[in-house]
Image (cartoon, rainbow, N blue to C red):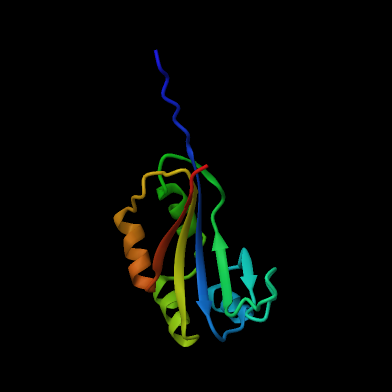
Length: 133
């Protein structure tokens, strides 16, 4: 008999504000959330070029399973302010909210209605970065 090997996906969700000209410390004050990471536009990358924009972000813990919804649920639960505040922050700073789902292997890429509503209300772009080894 042949055996089927099922590998669970490793999933992490990120919410990042991306823009050309804002002070990440202002975003921390305005959201009431301590970021997981901050990138500065003048930060020099390994290739010798400047990073080129600002990023202020939070990330979920690593989830192992068959679907992305638990990681996204955790990410949204980390947000301490309402969606109108997040949308206003993006407009004020001429910036864009991005939700990026990092996965190793391919889990079910399904959001529930509340998650879709959250993304829409903050005006977020949603993307996926999948790695299968």
